[in-house]
Image (cartoon, rainbow, N blue to C red):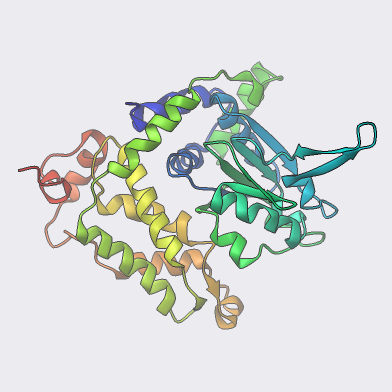
Length: 342
């Protein structure tokens, strides 16, 4: 059985020959692939959003396609359609770029809502309906959609239903001066360096095998209650009109399990939930007008909620054990979160 932690280490080691300073993004996209999730990747132009997605595609044994989203793109351009051939008098199905393992939807907010919605059935059901016929999509199937937060002209806001189907929203930041210097040096030494410079290090079968491991991760009832408290607080917050959905609750639990596996554990600890709370919840909160006028962001609300809710087990000081638990499986803290096998 493939260990998700080993799979991630191989992916990280191979992609870091090109990628600098975005390890957390890579880590969380790996979490999404292990938990059948989809990712919304936001960042200003030039911060390697598309490159990250392409690197992951090239490092895995997965078929992938890139769709450049534009205002004139039609739903059939994504899902496919039937074409009449006059030569033989028959209709033939032409599948669209969605029929692959990894779809990179570049600048998704440039496509109109009708076209964005063409991805809804694919993302939720793993299937596509074309002129009355329902077709299954390949397994695994993951959508990584990039988005530019700066430009408003020629863009369309993602519908709420569309945002909620993204398991998480990740934000790529401008690199710090040290990382940017490393980028300069690397491209000075190899000007042709790009996503095609890496090799495949993970097979499709290994990824599918690793995905079967994550659901077996143990999670204590107290941590489930912790997840429910966090998500529930988003619905009652004074600055929020509409909080996170039950789908977000499930996503938070699933991603916390995957993070535990990447950290080499068979059980979830509260820190796993904390790590995934922001990526899973930030795009699902609808802020009220007062919050928008005061420039209070969804990220700020989530951070406030995490600070206000006491994690389970915090009545005992385990600060010295957290790093051990994350690094090598833990010692004293194991007794709290490990399943009772007696």
